[in-house]
Length: 324
Image 1 (cartoon, rainbow, N blue to C red):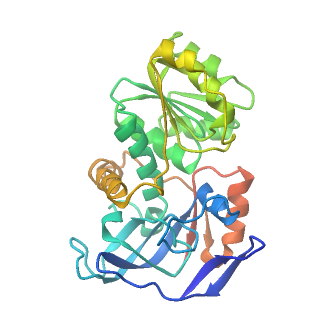
Image 2: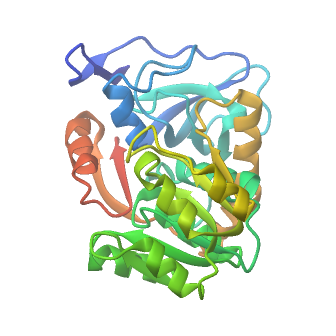
Image 3: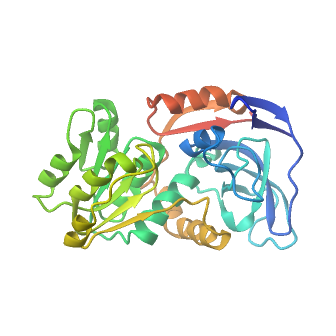
């Protein structure tokens, strides 16, 4: 088969590589579309290596058609259209993945669109629901509301009865966040999200923050939290280190959690995927959560897709596609 490989100079090449081997718990997927994520940029640069046993190629999610199944696979058949949360290997014609990390593609959206849903949905569900314990009436602050994860987070949180504040750059991205259900959109290039979020909540602060920035937002995020608020860090775009004001945590009885999906054991990732299938897929099928697609690129044009993501001009998901 062919796949995107990263050479020693961090350049992408469309090369012939060995076919994936199908284990007893694996399904072999003929990939139709793959999501492009910032983790792919980090892996390309050598800052986010794949876990042991994972395919060496980029790509943390895909959608496609099942070509073969292992002897111990249940609930999935050859010919099924599925989505998969991958430890790697999405930038390829085919991938083998443990069947417990797959879901039947949801009704109501195309298979191409489905290729960009599972990683964002799993990230949002695991943080807001599993770790954050979001409930109806909570106020959520989403940083990067117009991103692939942000657009899904806004919709899931609204479906769960939360009030949503989103940060984004510029009026167009703010308008997108509001169309998706955000109750307040803050232009972080011209407005202070701490001031705006506290004013919006009458000085109380927000209950949860879904944060992709990390280090440079740490203190300001804690300033934005209400008592017993939860800061959920899912990225380090603003730095991998920061000063943690423990006194502020103590006074507010707040908590800080940080997690990635890829590093978690298979059993935990499988639980997240199952939770998404149970709680999020019905929202998609009812039209309460919709895919937001920025652009598509042919798989062999992954370089152009990475340039689009790196520019920060995108709104919604960038996908790599193949096939007619």
